Image (tube, rainbow, N blue to C red; front, top):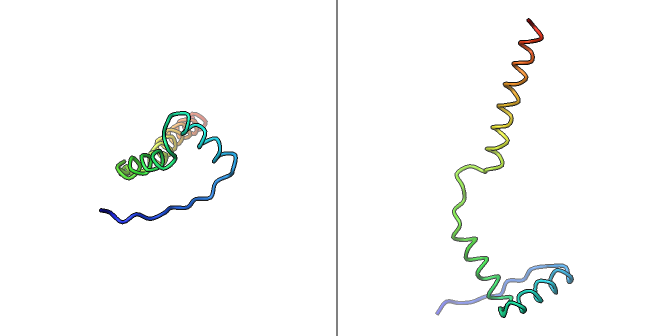
Length: 76
């Protein structure tokens, strides 16, 4: 049997109460929902490259191309 330990987090009371209410309305426990989230998070593979950074780089390249085109038109 695995050794268990507690995990304590700080959360605003209003959010805690809303979370607890939703969990209970679904017939679940807070522990069950959080453990499922943690397990799914652990199993999710991290991307090779941050998607936001990749999008930023693509947008930057398009912007650079547009600036070069504009500068070329101004020079002509």
